[in-house]
Image 1 (cartoon, rainbow, N blue to C red):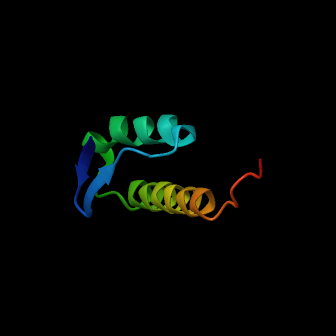
Image 2: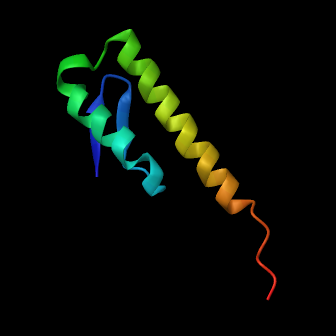
Length: 64
């Protein structure tokens, strides 16, 4: 699932900790998309999603 902005789609987070951030952006998108402040929030959201994904991928496997 995703929603569109003038700069492209914003996709649902893989990390559930970002779910409420995504839902807030999705709710604001119809009124605020294109606004500089809104686009900055989208950039922050996408950076957090990327960083969290990288962190999970780079975690060492737990030893048994």
